[in-house]
Image (cartoon, rainbow, N blue to C red; front, side, top):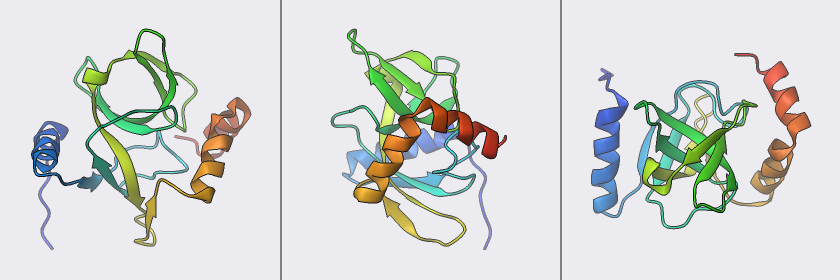
Length: 145
């Protein structure tokens, strides 16, 4: 099978188009910032943002133009978001709703081609553990970049 390399600007346009048609959009993840949940090239499926809550994983565009898929750690009183990758300890402040493009609804693991929805008991337990700074520290030591 022949593949086509693209960039996130084009993917962003395709995501917006999918949302106008009432669809979700799936694309490969890149990087290690969401380990152990997401590995490089796992497929992530995003949907249009309706409401956001603490713990949601969102695709957003930084002011420098970089696209990032990280978790909402806190919703601030000024309606901005504090966001951090599961594999990171440094948080990002001041993300606005306008910066957020989509919310993650499921992912498919590259290693077993199995799809996982972001609901249910197992995922709820994972979210509780990943909130812990001790677990975040352990995660950064075990899954070194």
